[in-house]
Length: 63
View (tube, one colour):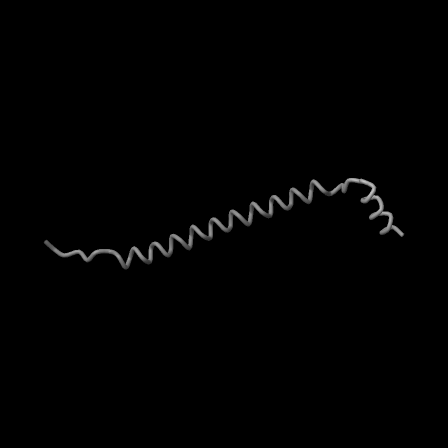
């Protein structure tokens, strides 16, 4: 029963050899998600501001 041995070894305090790699992948995934989120919010915020700026632009009259 290899599965039973694996779980018993984990309960006995054996450290998962892939633990550091899992943390690195998790940190990289969070960094990519946060970067994408900030970029998307900046892009959409800029587009919305540009749209409102077009509407608020005063009419120019020749003097």
